Image (cartoon, rainbow, N blue to C red; front, side, top):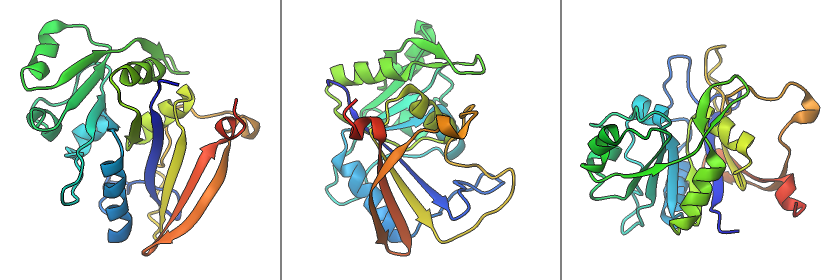
Length: 229
């Protein structure tokens, strides 16, 4: 297909929360599940998050296994709002880092290219509420041209929702921890406008359910991929 295989991965509680009402998410799953995620990072060519995740958590997005492969870090940042002093930017000369953006301001881009980041200018599109966002299909096409054949999507609810809407998700890996956060303001894994009717849901087929330490992993694929459409 010349497009990357995209695995959407998230960890949630029994009540479907990826963070508490205060926004805290470390740690939902246990040590065994977290170690497996680093093995996944080792196996994937790229790892993708949104600018919001970088701003909220300032993650390194590396593989912490001994002798582990370091995936290319891909930041989806429509307007280039990623902090210039964030870890992904300040370490871009050591770990390949791509900022995917709709911003064409070369002076604004230079702040990041001077630190070693690569800029990918991506077409813009709009969500159901009219908000401008990256065209993730165009981004995946460009990533394929960059020989990035697999991407671990570890974004927040907004990017997860956009990825499902764009149809770029090849597989979903859901880690479920035996915990309950509660709270109406606590975040769930998929944001965006969602669907209006149950019959419009994104449908998946469960391919695997297994226990990892104290947590459960569910691996599923979109039905359209399963049916070969």
